[in-house]
Image 1: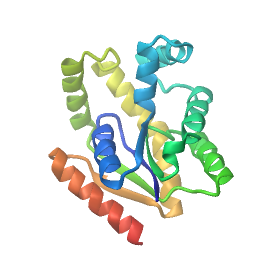
Image 2: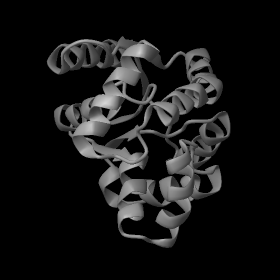
Image 3: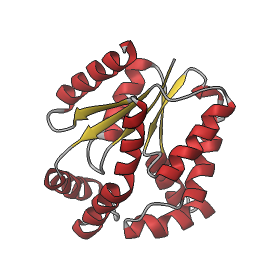
Image 4: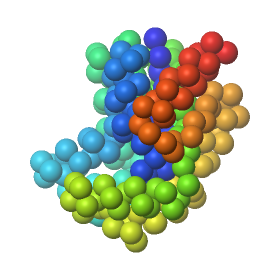
Length: 192
């Protein structure tokens, strides 16, 4: 059983790699971004609230995000393991996730961090915005999201590094090349 999370700045390839890890390890990938976007598209009350923050490039508040993740982790398909993509993003969310997992006598096995240069990420995200028409991806919003990542999420990375479960992988390169590095890193982390 594998319980893990993938973390990294916006545009670092988390979603792509999460899908590949999910397939190869036979664990469900849980993306908070996908859940938020589905709610926005469906104009649910959560989606309407989340859209205000997403359009400004801000994180959706912990109160909304935590409830969504707690509910999702209570579903049957996570019993054999899971991969969280996009959560936790703050140290308060780390603590909340710890509480959720402790109730089931569980803990994270691996925290995988994809690393990439900010300028490369801006270039990637602007290209993705043109291809997909995502309203939340313009240069000002992208740079704001990267700033938020550096301000808030790096503390999450430091917390998991202190626990000895952080594995860093270079997210720059071809998709298959990055996947190979990711799978080798997970294998090494699980053997440790």
